Length: 314
Image 1 (cartoon, rainbow, N blue to C red):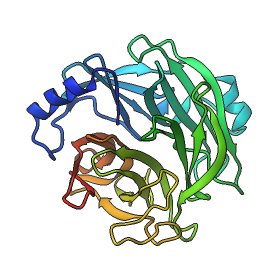
Image 2 (image 1 turned 90 degrees about the vertical axis):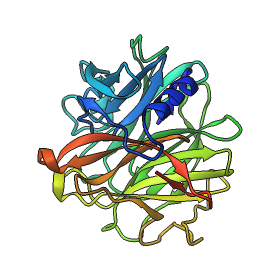
Image 3 (image 1 turned 30 degrees about the horizontal axis):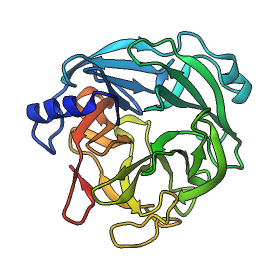
Image 4 (image 1 turned 45 degrees about the vertical axis):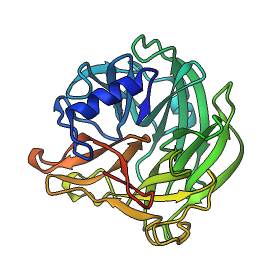
């Protein structure tokens, strides 16, 4: 979840309309896979995996949603150049953040069940005005490397940008970002991975919480993308330093552990296999497969809370 310039006022409105900890009561078009949500000038936007990155919009504080177009109407030449098997407009796992006077949109392109992937960047003055500028390729990978998917921009407690990314090919990683180009710079650090290629992990979403003075790393484990047969689960770990070590609720290091963190959410009877979360200090968004619509992927949003031990909940 990434908040725009007028977020605090709007959050107070959303909290007044829905009980803390409850699922937001959303209607309209909420079909979305790998969601990221963003508030700007009184409107909420959702960005989703799909043709050209699908855009959802809400004019009433996140209650009623509509499909509002897509970021890219035509494939960019650099997509197939960096992921040669790629064809068409299918784009994965967007992430969006306002930083240094501009809105930055990271996204990835990959081949399913392969480490042949790349992450890309686009930017705009604002989401509302659109006119997205292509800011190039960020990182590429091949089958024998880390997997360059699922980018997540995070601003550390000093105000400096970092990018996390990755999957079960090499685990989840983090690196500093140049504040001018917003491209990765410096050393790549592995922050978590699960033991064994048969134990998938992906979709890092990293936040810093000032009240508890921790970095919280959310991720998704097991398998998505097969509707109601999916086994996705959300996990969380935390660290005093953005590069780790990250520990689970029992105080164990999450690198090469069975789960890669403590279980946070496994879904419910209606929304199965929730995951590919997008988290802010106040709100958490993710998709779940809707058992009442034959496994359609739906956007879910909750207010994010913290318990007395400083662990996130909802």
